[in-house]
Each structure stands twice: as C-alpha cells, then as structure tokens.
Image (tube, rainbow, N blue to C red; front, side):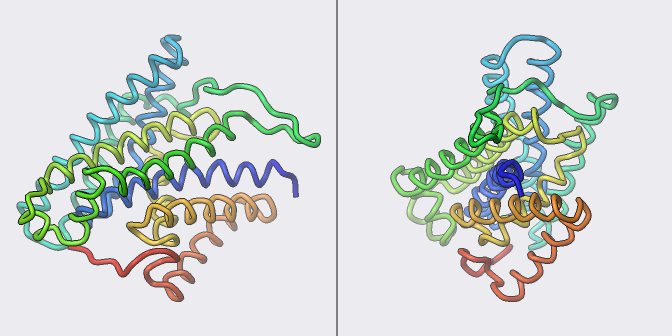
Length: 289
C-alpha cells in the first residue's frame, strides 16, 4: 500500500478531527451535540470557491472573509439552537434545533450554488513534496499541521486562559459557575463562535482536495460525530485521536475494498467502541440535557 493512501487518511482524518473538536467545544458548556456543525465546512469551501475561483481576489481576502462569516455563523447558530432549547425546557429539544439549523443552512447553500457539484478552489499550498518517489501534496501536509496546531492551541487555551477555565467550570457545573460569577451564556456564545470558525477554516483547507458540495455539511457532521464518539465526546485530545482513526481506517479500507466497505467498517467500529467503551477511548460519561 502506497504512502499516498496513508497521507490521504491523515488528511481526511485531520478534517474530521477538527469537526470533532468543534463538537466537543460546543458540547462542553452546553451538553448539546450540534448536528449543524458540518455546515461551517461548507461555508469555508463556498467562500474560498467564490472569492478565489470566481472573483479571483486571492487567498488573503478569502481567509479574512471566512473569519468574519464563520464568526457570524457561530453567533447565528447559537441563537437558532440555544434559544429554542432554553424556551422549550425539553431535554431533547437540542436534537430538533440542531437538525433544523443544519437544514436551513443547507437550503441556503443549495439555493446559492444549485448548479455547482463541488466547491473547489485552487490549492492554498500548491505543489508536491517528493519523498522516496512518492508525491505528497503540500495542501495535505498543511492541513495535518494546522489540525495538530489547533488541537494543541485549544488545549493551551483551556488550561492557561480565563475563558478556558470558565469553559471548564461551565462544563463541570453550569449552575455553580453562575454562582461564582462566570458569564455562562457568554461562554456558550464564544464556544459556538470558536467552533464555527475552526470548521470554516477546515472547509477552506479541505475544499481543494475533498469533495464538498452545497449539501455536504451533514456528511462531515456524521464523520466528525463518529470521531468524537470514538475519542470521547467532550475530549479535545480524543477528537484528534478519533478523527485520525476514522480517516486512516476509511482511506485504507476504501483502497482495499471500495467506498461502500469503507463506510461499513467505520460504522462497525463505532458500534464496537460504543459496546466496549461507552464513553469513548478518552472521554468521561456523557450527560445530555
């Protein structure tokens, strides 16, 4: 098996890991699994396609616009999801709210790019690296490096900053955090924004090489969710491990037996992990509202 297959797996796994991390970021202070978390991936791909491929403005403009629109999507997602959850009082309202948000964003992307199969701009890091006769795309290496840096940076953010400690406190006990003077609602809002921005930039990195269509958001949510469950929902380090496991397993099995078998094996692994390790490989027992 060629090194390219393993690199493809690490590349896809890095994207899934970023989605899993975003799910963990929102889950920690809210106990909500955001099934609309894949939509910022499509946003990042759409912005890079529109700005770089169609308008020819270049990557600096695309990255800046992605940052602004990603943050705006995070703010809007928090209102669309958390407001109904708070008003309903139901412990299952988050399921309907997150799926509804996903469907709304998907409809908007589909209306705008109904005639586009793949939102594919030119590579942010074009070219290849030759290693022992193997051509390794710089775009893939950049994505893997960015994923590792984001994971390490968020881990430091949680441990070394005031907002990071506030997120950890709200995750442990939201009511006690309020009593201690922690602005839990502001923490929740910040979590949605951070998660959306991370996924939007993941979409920018993935779009030149992975298939991302206007309706692809839910697929990335599912793969990120599987990665999060395998690694442990709410665990940033588990998100990285789960994403890489899903990406590598999917790439290797697809290369050996085809795409359908790859999906079957990934979902089979999810079932085995849930039976053997209900809280994932690195997670703690999950509580949902």
